[in-house]
Length: 100
Image 1 (cartoon, helix red, strand yellow):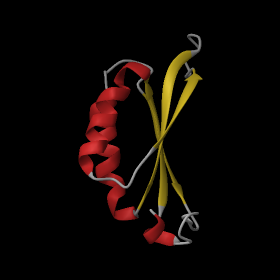
Image 2 (cartoon, one colour):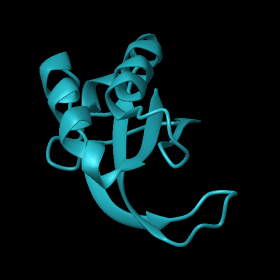
Image 3 (cartoon, one colour):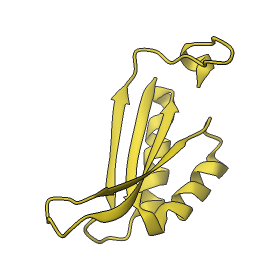
């Protein structure tokens, strides 16, 4: 199991969201964010998307996000993949892949 964190331009969020909703992923969390990259051109409005997924889904999800978020300009964002030890669904007590 992994957590995919994608930080994308605010203006590209609707495109990314539409692609992910059609993909059948289990769900996502969206967090408003501000940041800057190595160009240090001031804080920009961004959106952070968090997705829990099985390893076999990672490549497809990353490709969907990259294609939907890309503008070919500096500041398009980042995608990080973090390995998870376990996940628990609070309501039912399910854990692991069943909790995704």
